[in-house]
Amino acid sequence: MPRISNRAKTMPPSPIRKLVPFAEAAKKRGIKVYHLNIGQPDIPTPEVMMNAFRNHEIKVLEYGHSGGLWEYREGLVKYYRRHNIHVSKEEILVTTAGSEAIIFAMLATMDEGDEMIVPEPFYTNYNGFAVEAGVKVVPVTCRAEDGFALPPDAEIRAKITPRTRAIMICNPNNPTGYVYRLEEMNRLRALVLEHDLFFFSDEVYREFVYDGKKHHSVLHLEGLDDRAVLLDSISKRYSACGARVGCLVTHNKDILESALRFGQARLCPPTMEQLAALAAVDTPQSYMDAVFNDYNRRRETVFNALGKIPGVVGQKPSGAFYTVVKLPVDNADRFCRWLLEEFDDKGETVMLAPANGFYATPGLGDDEVRIAFVLNSAAMERSMEILKKALQAYPGKRIA
Image (cartoon, one colour):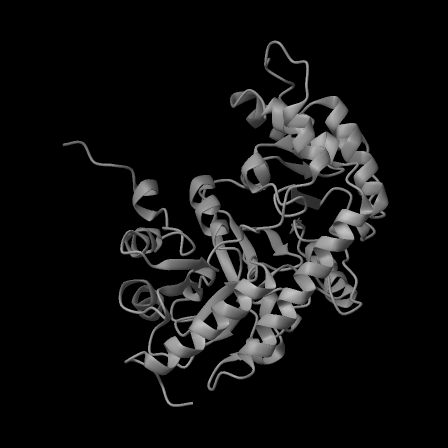
C-alpha cells in the first residue's frame, strides 16, 4: 500500500474537535452536552444578513472575482473606516474564511522551513495552517501569572533566527481573551522593523473588548505599510461561523498580488455568502451593542462561578469570549474525556477543550482547559455548576 505524506502524518488533530466522538456517544446515551469547547455562539445571526440569503433575484450562482466581489470589498472599506482603519478596496482580498487568509499570508511570505513567531497559547489551528504551508511555528510563552501579557523583548528576540519571517498575534486573543496594549503593539512594531519581518494580526474579535480597554489594529501602527497584514473574518462578528467569509488586508502590493494568484487557483470565495456579508455591513449598531452586552454578562457569570470552585485559577479575559483556566486535575485531556464518558449530573455534562493543544511547547497546558462562553447566561451558569460537581467527583483530582 502506498504511504501517505509526511505532511499528512504531522497534521495535528484539533483539540477543539478531537473529543467529538465521545460527545456524540454521550448524546446517544441520552446525556445533554453543553458545548463550551468550540467558538460557536448561540447568538442569532443579524436579520439583515439572513434576509440577503432569503430574498434575492439570483438566477445563476456564477463564479465571482478571485479576490472577492468588488461591491463587498467596497462595503469592507466602509466597515474598516468605522474602526479608523483606512484602506482601499484594492488592498482587500476576500478569502474563504479567515483560515484561508492566514494560509495565504503564510504562502505569500514564507518558504518551506521558514519560521513564524507566535505568542502562546494561540489559536490551535495556526499549527495546522503552518503544516499546510511548510512553516515552523516558534512559540513565545505568555504566562497566566502575568495575565498572558507579552513577555520581555529579550525573550522574543532570542527566538529570532535567520529563518524567521514573521511575528503573528491574535488580538483579542483566542484562547485567553487577552487584549494587547498599545505599548505592546509598538514593541512588536520595533522588533519587526529591527529584524526585517512581517507583522500578521488576526483581529477577528475586535468588536469584543471589555472593561473600557481599546483594541489597537496592526494597521493603526505607523511605518509598517510593507509589513503589516490584517487577517479577519465575519464568523464571530455576526455570529455567522458557517458562512466562511474572511479577508486579508494589507498595503503591500506584492503580498496582495501573490495572494490573488493563490486565490485564482481555488477560483473564488463563495458568492452568496459574500452578498450576505455585504448586507451585514449595515447591521444596526443596536444589534452589535446587544451582542456585546450579552457576552459581557456571560463573562461575568462564568467568572463569578469559577471563583467559587476550589483549585480553579484563571484570568478574567479582556476580550473575545474565551478563557483559559487551570484545573485541579492530573491531566486535562483525561478529565475532558471523563466528563463525556463517565460523568453526568442529572443527565447533563459539559464539553471543554484541553488547553495543551493551544501551546506549541510540550508539557504546557496539561492541566488547563479553554472555556468558550458561547451559550446564554443560564446555560453558562448551569455548565459551571456541572463543572464544579465534576471536579468534586473526578478520581484524578488534585488537592487545591
